[in-house]
Length: 341
Image 1 (cartoon, rainbow, N blue to C red):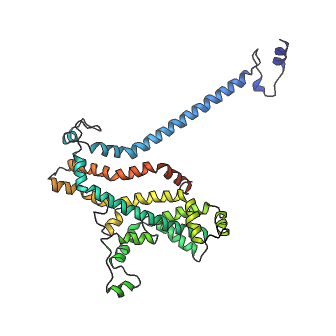
Image 2: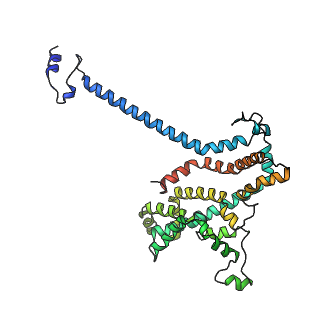
Image 3: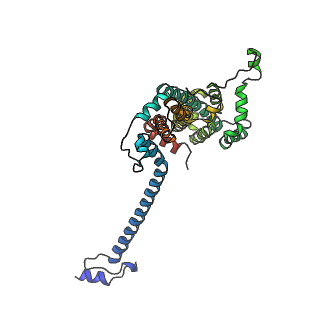
């Protein structure tokens, strides 16, 4: 009892902790801690609620139309005109997918599209990584000017150079050499060669962005890695392919996925160079509605839209599968490649 009395008489340094109970606990200190915990918990709850609201809103804006297309692709004619049917069809049917599959010639066209996109993606990763590595590690005349051209490739819309591109490949010649050998300049329009030539020289679809990504990533790698390789007797190419490119795997995966998706969905260059519909699904899907209407004598635009919805889902399916399989590597690559931050 004497110790308790002495404790009550003694004034602590902190005036907020003066009152104590008979057991010796500071009452105000407990109140302050409790209030701070409640405040922090409330702030955490509001922050979590705000995050969920934002995520749900973004998901609704992005996934809402996709879910609507997916639901309507199973609609029957009666469901389409039934005002009570919104998302879940009462009489689901697979007829839209069957006709869309046949009209698109889906199996062969999708295979040719994937081969076309994958080969361009591989070339683009190799060539853009080389250019990005050169800008990041070597000094040469007009380096800043040339890198400014890379930035211009990102900024300037491709529509502004569509006429020069068209004329270049309509009469493709290299300093008049092909004209002297073949007698006339070859016309590469209607083939896939313009895309392969542009990609090989690192000026294809979105190549400026890919060069910038690789440049930022290689600049972040320590130079000691290359110096150790040179000391061990490795040459420039051996150091690049066996060491630097392997360390740039996250950036390479990011560029590979971006390139594959954009090549797969490209319609601008496909129409500009008149690439065949049998090569790209992105061109064939544009004529799906008119083809179905002419072949199957369907003239109702609302019903034709249901076939278009089924075709859109079929076109999206390979990309969704690729993203699901490479989601982890894609997110890691985006975080480490210098795109964000």
